[in-house]
Length: 358
Image 1 (tube, rainbow, N blue to C red):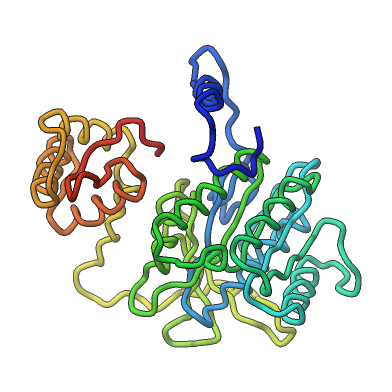
Image 2 (cartoon, one colour):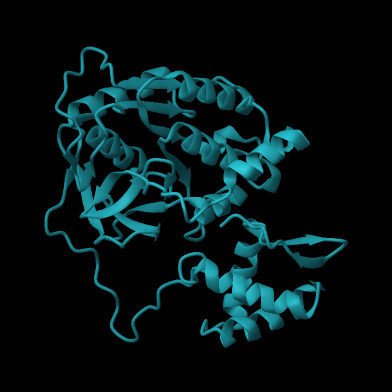
């Protein structure tokens, strides 16, 4: 089958083949995804999945990602990142969609210096693409060809995923590029790490593409400037499927390289009631719980208006031990829609998609 085709273009015959090939069986064994990136023993990246870094402007996101790449390049530790790439998968592809070739070269040199490698000659395991001058479709095609035609590829960085779409708020475009990331990582058994800006006013990744990334990525790292010292950046896990890790901080030293701040403690939380962890319907509720609650709701009625859906979900999720209120129902419905577990068609009614992909 031609991997260049969009999913919607496959024929009925091809769909039948894919359906048969996608069936799980208890008589077969399935390998656990190889873990290639960790922080403090917590897995942040596996082959066959993708992750993301988000942060506001000037938070040093690219410096942080340079450390991830340098760790992968030396197959060791840089800052708190520990890379363990398989022997036959050592190649890294770094794609920059925003900066000039001059700036990209500076990033490339920095990565090599952080990995303890010579910065005056190319390294066979690092390929760097500067794609600023191309359109979103051209960028997608170029990256796709590079991914499918680079032997021994393990890690791909996309610095500027928003430049792979025309409109970051378009659900169709966002779903399409995230589906590509899922397809590429699965087909080639690689890990892709993307970088996306945060909204100025809140903690969310920008646009609809940010929502999709939050819902589908195995890890979302948050890079933010320290409130008291703008030279220091903190790294924490905003979403992580594995065990959470202790946040760490780095500063840029006199050699223009990120340097770990040992023993650094971010500003203590204000006294009073501890801040409750932000409700995340993807992380805090299991797929099984979602399925049971949704089947109960839509077993009673096939379609709902928004308000009655909200009330039905609160009742159903609460009955299976997930405490919901109206405030939490809003992000829950957003997540269910983004993952197409429920869809809004026939005017404004919501229906259930039982064959959802979680």
